[in-house]
Length: 267
Image (cartoon, rainbow, N blue to C red; front, side, top):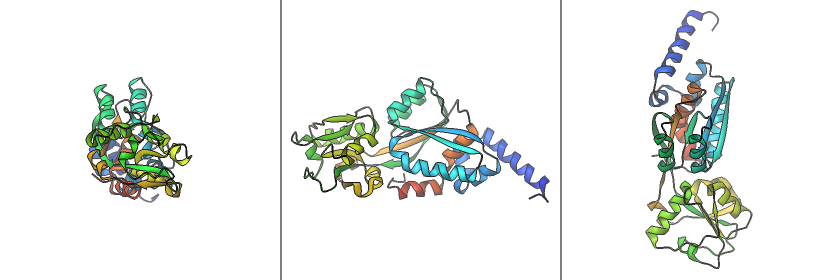
């Protein structure tokens, strides 16, 4: 590299100029595996990603990959229910990227004019019933969410996993009787893991991530409420170049494979 400085510098400048002028879509097209093309642009500082709680595992992994490709960069996450994140953003919380578990909460952010470019759907998720190991409540399907003898957890209606659950209940005519409504899907799953509830309506990806700690029960009605996940770089992003690089990695073949491996669906 030291023998050809005049060849390397123009390449770095070209990448920097492309990052300044390109949209989120062009960033996705111009990035290679693990953000190696952005590594040449020397991404540094901190990039803050607000992301739905269901993305915790896979986004943490992708963040580490981007950091490895860019040693001067730190990827910081705020994982929570999408509705809580959207509220934080509209109230002025600083962030670079927002990834929502449904379009409704992304709309809250875009209607406030906080986005840079157009949000892009990067994955999908489907509901699944989680029960404690051994299934002590003998849960068999969605109809059991109307059984008052069982202790049931769902996400709150304003949270994407809760909104999806409400669609399922409405489509099937189930009068669900939850004992607790959680503010994000991880909280609902934790209730199952601790044996505090007989069943919870969560995502299939959460059941997969929990491993042997819980059992999953798939149900056909879940196909009536598939959640599409959009992502966008925010207009006031403190680290816009790194934000575009993270979004590009998520949407790249490498990012899509990581999502698929975690149980997400590729749109």
